Length: 317
Image (cartoon, rainbow, N blue to C red; front, side, top):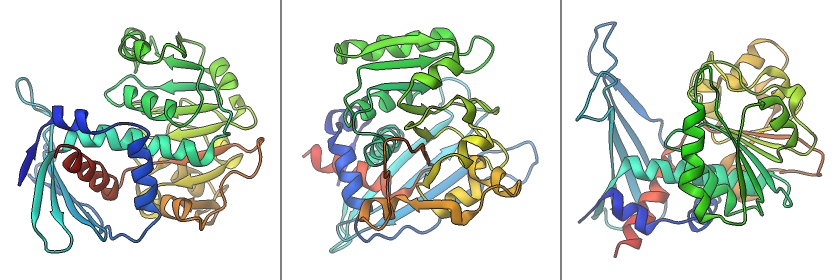
C-alpha cells in the first residue's frame, strides 16, 4: 500500500484531466452513503469533530476521514484529512492519500465541470469571489474548460475576503496564464454585470450576489456556504435562474441558497432541474440557449474524493 503525500497529489493531478474523470464517474453507477459527522464532546462550547465520507464504484472503494478542531493553534492545523483507497475487485488496500490536497483539487474540478456543462461555450470573462485556499484551483479548473480572457478577483476591504488577499491570488496564477488579463475589483455590482461566469467561494455569512446585477447568459457557481440559514446570493438570483445542484440530499439539507427561497414560498424542490449525476449521465436538460442564467450549488460529495484520490494513486505509480 502506498502513502501519497500532498506534494505527490499536486504532481499527479491536473486540469482538465480531473474534470474529465469527474464527469465520467458521475455519469456511471456509484454508491455514496450519507457522510457521518461526529462531535467529540457534548460540551456546548466544544465543536471538535470527526467525519467519515465513503463512496465506491465498479473500480474503487474510498473513504475520507477528517478531524476538525477549530480551537487548534500553531503548529497544529484546524483540519487533518486522509483518504483510504481500496481495490473494488478484491478489497485490497491500495493507498492512503492526503485528503486536504485532494479536497482542494476535486472542489475546483467540480466547479470546472459545472462550468463545462452549464456555461456558454464562448464564456470569456470570469468573476471570482473568494481568496482562500480554493481560489487558485477555481481559476485553473475553469480556465481549463472555457476560453477565458479576463478574470476579476473580488476583495472586500470591509470584511472577507481582504483586498490584499485578492492581489496575492493573482500573483500565484498570473504567470501560468499569460493570455488572461487579471484584475482586482472593488465594485461587485459592476463586475457581476460584466461576467460570463461567476464563482463564489467565500466565508462570508452575508448575501454577496444579487439577481438584479446578473446579465443574461451568465453561469453562477456557489461553493462557499454550507449552512441552511446562510447564503451567498439573494432569492432573486435563484428565482430568475435554471438551478442545478451537486446532490439533492445535500442541497436540501445544507444549502441556504436553495432552502431560504423554498421557505419563503417562491421556490420549490421540484424547481431544481437536476443533480450532478443526472447532468453527467445525459438524463438532464442543460443550458438550452445563450440567454438563460444558470446556477450550480455544490456542498461536496464523497465520490469526488474517490476520483481525486484514485487519480493521485494511479498517477504516482
